[in-house]
Length: 198
Image (tube, rainbow, N blue to C red; front, side, top):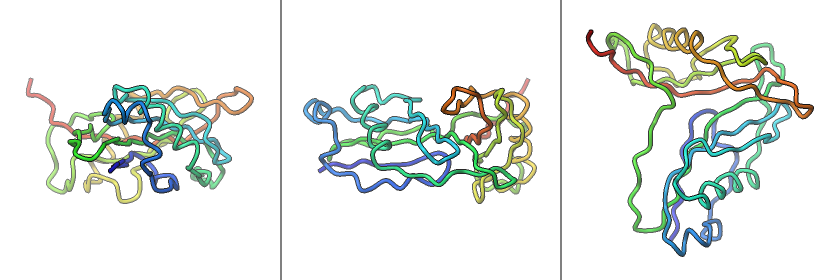
């Protein structure tokens, strides 16, 4: 029996239909290949998938390719909107785990970036936060906020993450259909780590 376990970083999973045994790549099934792949999706301001690329490989090209193929075939998005309600492109990562029955789940990295802090505040509920950036056409962060219900529980810690990422992060541009860079939303999950003592 096939098990494909989906987890994602970012907006709710695109409306994917149930995955069946027919979806498992034939070569991977024959060779008993299993693994986790993280793909980065770029969805344009009309809600159309503009790009799907492997961000973290499963180690098996056929599993990596099948992940993007299934997303292209079955996923649908509502266009994202900026703070003014205008349609805007967005980029996020989607993780899928390909397993045949009896396979052992792999541990997956839960965050894309670590943010060092001096100490964890008492009001912290979890050592992670999902941040939503509005990114200018030149790749620089215009604004940052914590995705609804996905903060650390500490407003100060979440603000520090946004401040740190806004100062240090530059993203590759997203291009429209005419090849021009456009504003977009980038969702990124960060983890908080304690800075080593100096």
